[in-house]
Image (cartoon, helix red, strand yellow):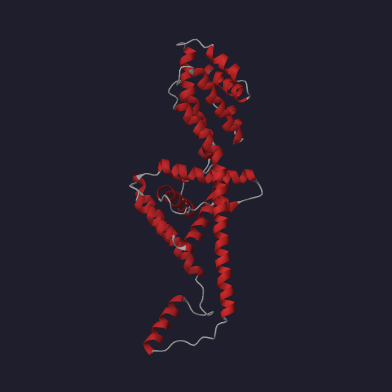
Length: 317
């Protein structure tokens, strides 16, 4: 079991999710959370602590905590259940949910334990309230509690209530339909998870490209050069942004002077197939000069830090 400080609370969420009706209710709350974020405007995300949390906020963060800690258990992902006619909007929903998980993992720590316990109590109370409100009547006029009481009286009297003979063929048909419906739901959930994973891949590729830049330690091999390695990494970053349809983020980066303008030109040249031109321009920079030092900081730190703040999952949950 996980040794994370909030692991015990995550597994309590898992216990709640093991109830089919509770799982369905939590999924509905997570869908409501994503719809709230669609219309949030300037409303801050939950972990900014600048507003009162809704029940949907609390349930969504509990489910996100479960996804992070309860490895190997079936997770809840609401994004595929909110599919629209717009693939762009579907992608944004997937990003919103992935962003919530990322932010819960980064920001929710042991100092928030009391908050998480309170959210769990509110979630359990909310589910129980819905259960009571929608509790069905047995035979049109009996509640589950009354039915249990009647069974106790029947047992004490040594009798059982009379019931009409069942149509076994119809009952078998109904059970078969129940099994088929369950299989269909499982297949749909599996497909939804696959689509959600596909939607998150472009952002993951951008992050991977930025990690490669930040972790670069120098050329490897007798024929390798730092200039060639940097151009290759910039081309890889350009391709990742293009695949995610986020090349416009390059135009929104803050101006950090000559080094920023120089690197942006290299990125665009490398991405447009002009790697040799980019390589020659980078090789012309005087070693150990001011521009050389500024470029090193820009390539290793500043570009990565500024660009990651502009990714969709950093702007909205």
